[in-house]
Image 1 (tube, rainbow, N blue to C red):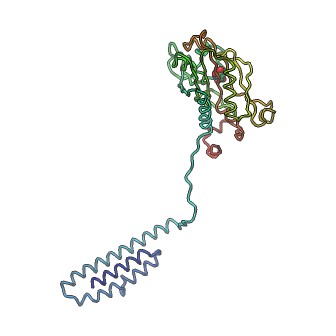
Image 2: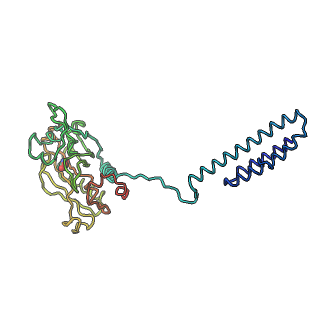
Length: 342
Ligand code: DAH
């Protein structure tokens, strides 16, 4: 009889487990556990056993009954729970995980570093919170000089240093020049400093926090042809083989002579179009390092000479074809619909 019970239990167990609706389970409960169900039919035979056996088989009988009842209850709860969650269609395509991508400016920084590293420049980083001395004075811009106004500087509320003056948010990467000279002490220097810069400005072509990259080369016998060659190399690597650069006389306090640097427009190869009008885009400044700057960095201007250049990462990147951004501020708006395009 206990064999019969065992068989019944195995069969009921399998049927209950494969049931997939509450109605089916109710029917199974009636078939096995109901008044006229299979279990009760077996119970009839209990009567014919002697008292010892009755006790033993009786226990097995009750265990089987309880186990099946519990299983049916569990299954019903499980199915009700799923019904509550709603119908699940396993053929519906899943939710794709969001794929991140590098910010346009990060991409540009990586590309720019790579280009200059090819010709032996070393990428360096200097403080974002800087002293006035490195940002201006060492760059031949004495205190209260009107030229400083152009840099629309943020000042940090911090006691002034006797030697280095006020604390500022670095307004340009040129502050890396005297820092690099002091670090290296004895040239040659081939530095590329790419960093965040801050100025009090905000319109569709300016943001208060932006990025610049600054090149500095100092050695014996460095002249303007080295500067022009380096800038041309960059133009071709960054904008394509057809790109050319030109330098125009300009004035900066920290270079003499100084130039503004233009790149030929990549949309029209310098012929002139709606983007450039003239065929050229102005990108930044450059020049031969002023002797006073070399002196401030502890380098003898009678022995060494050097060139420097610096311009905006955002601006350089925005001149590439396929990147049309009317308002620079959207780059830092954290709107993913905008940022995912690049
Ligand atoms: N620091 C200048 C600026 O922020 C750009 C610049 C001009 C950098 C001439 C240079 C340079 O290294 O030689 O406008």
